[in-house]
Image 1: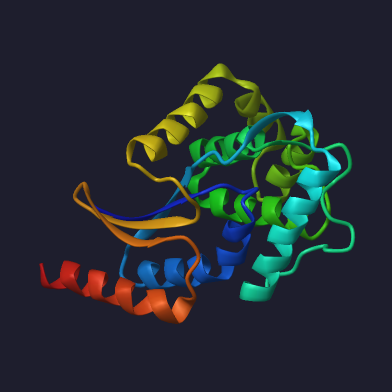
Image 2: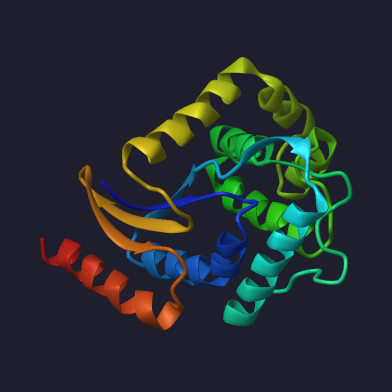
Length: 209
């Protein structure tokens, strides 16, 4: 079995910056019959509303990502009001989507990212995630029930543990997996013209093999 494994967090700004790159790489791999699999890495588990210093720090990260990648951000509005920066709910939404219809997970990821970074929506809130899941093509009730279930909470924690056990400390991380063996394509943002040739070589080795 061969697949790309994308380890990310929907509330990681560099993952939003990487979104066009991974979309292009997924298309490149798909032409060779290789699918993309999402793993939720788990970025932050805050329990308090962010203070002004924290908001300013995040805003500076957004500015840097925008300048490096060209991806859009609401830099004037910034983070949603009263945000508790806990990325577990958004990650759980992706894990839930993956369990219901694997193909919808990538669509939901893009919708969550755009809602958070461009539309200033609080994607830690279940009602927002349910709306976005419906937009991604998932059944609203099935998603809501799955999202609230203990099974999907455990599956999300399993994703976090998998990434941690593999030693993945930063996002985005893109791995190429063949028969249980992983090759690292990138740990951190890189432009498409750097990564496309690496993926091509990995795909070609699989054809020759």
